[in-house]
Length: 192
Image (cartoon, rainbow, N blue to C red):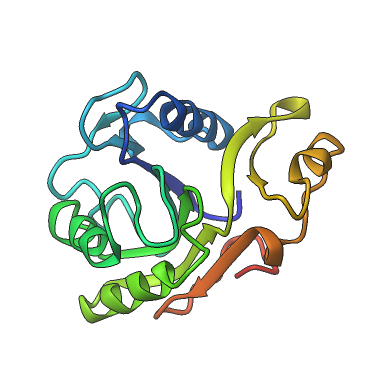
């Protein structure tokens, strides 16, 4: 992993597809149960997302926070960027994070990430990076148990590349937004 540690926030624990995806990524990164949070129903291996659960002792500038939910270019489940910023900051206690990686469809397609970043900066939150998929996506477990989000789009066939052990270029798959704090992951990456 490129980051010191990871956390998971499942915003739709009542949804079977989202739960499967969150569990696959939990297993891939071997994220301990006490760093895997559900907002609402608690699934096995996860704990309830309580007030302050993402405070600095849990999420730091060395943390990759993976957020799981259904999304589109303007919403993450029921949250626009300002509502999500309030949820993260006011309820969950997030103050700093190295990377927020959205495991959700199309959240990187429009300006959702930019608007979220601007709002979180106004709230004095320290963030290294945001990343979101530009297309529909699904978590697949491939050869050797490797889990990855495979994007689905009419223009290209990411699943074909995944089956061969490759993926299409990041500029076609994801959108990366630089945050307000200079953060460099443990392992260098062309993305961050």
